Length: 119
Image (cartoon, rainbow, N blue to C red):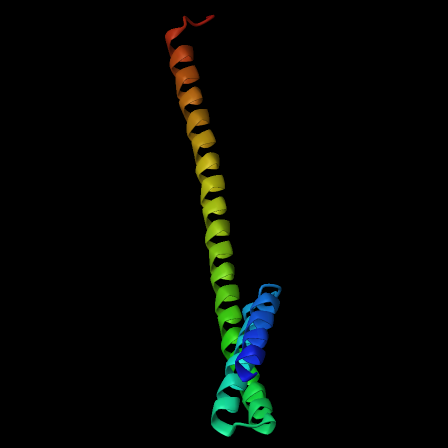
């Protein structure tokens, strides 16, 4: 009976975890399941199972929340790198245009110097 109940809990937990929106929720759910199993194994009664589920959920949430923070920080760093790359690309294009203008000016100066004066 206990094995069947445990299998149902594990399967339900796995299906529910698939719908979690972030690591904190997934960690909380996984921690609750693992904690419930540990609580049942240690205490052998409903109270032990509930305490284990509560402690596991809290621990899983803390770990998952830290993982979410790390992901957010990595995304922010990537966005800053992308912005920096865009700024460098825009500056490069501006410098290329300036160089083309300077070359055109030099070409026009040479052309003016080579043409006979109207004098």
